[in-house]
Every structure is written in structure tokens, then in C-alpha cells.
Amino acid sequence: MTEAHKEPNYMAIFWWLLILTILEVATTRLPAPRLIIAVLLVGMALTKASLVALYFMHLKFERRVLTMIAFTPLLLCVFLALMLMPDSKLALGGRTSGAAGTPAGEAAGAGSPDSKEAPAAPGATPGSAAPAEGEHQH
Image 1 (spheres, rainbow, N blue to C red):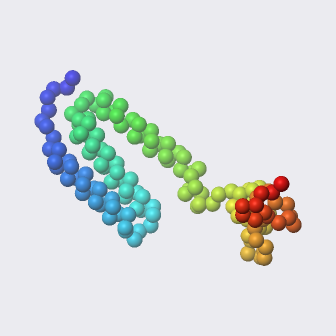
Image 2 (image 1 turned 90 degrees about the vertical axis):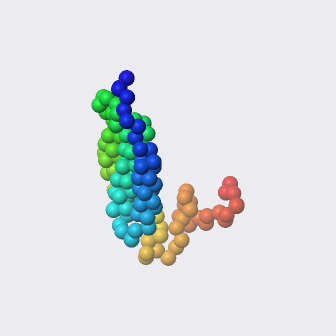
Image 3 (image 1 turned 135 degrees about the vertical axis):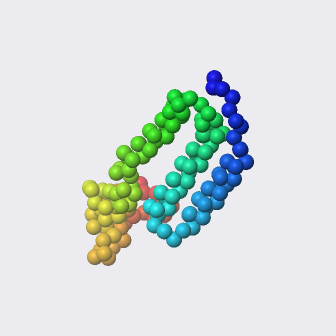
């Protein structure tokens, strides 16, 4: 066990956490691009998590090995988030793939600007009418 340490000023940590929380709420109201807001929010959240881990979990006063054990999941989380970002919808510009590799909503020409017809119901054959809402197809 580690030797006795000076008790941290818990009220000062509380006030820092409160200030950071208020700043987070204010950040969501900024007229800035979403990416900048997201980076600011993640930075403040990591700062708050560090304060809690260091002072309330007493990691500041523990051996270096225990601190590394506690922060390894955080590093793993950041690594996985960065590695999975290319697969995320945000990284792909918000486009999802529809049928046969066409963008969603444009399958088989339905809903195109030149088309005067309403999009066909899923599973409907050309020329068949889609059943009305609440009506079952037999």
C-alpha cells in the first residue's frame, strides 16, 4: 500500500467539474461547425474524467503501474474510435447504400427528379399498386 498522502481539496475539484459542465452546455450553443463542437466536448469530457480518476479515485497518489492499468482502457477506446471512423456514417458523408449499390431512395429510378411516379413499395412489382395502409396483401 502507498504511504499516507495529503487529502485533496475536494471542493476545488467539485468547482472545476461544475465549471467544465457549464462550459460543455454553453459549447453546445456555439454557432460553430459540428466537428469543432465535438472536439471541444470530447476534450472537456476527458478533462473531467481525468479529474475524477486522479482525485476521487486517488490515482494521483498511486503507483505508476496502477495508473497505467486504469488508463489503458481509455487508450484502447480512443484507438478503436479512430480505427472505426472510416466505417462510420459521418466519415462517409452521411450516405448509405440502397439496393444494388445505388444511394438510398434512388433504387430502380424511383424518386429521381425526372420520375413523375411515387416510389414503389418494397417488394412491389412494376405496375402493381401498393396496398393501402392497414390493408393486407394476400
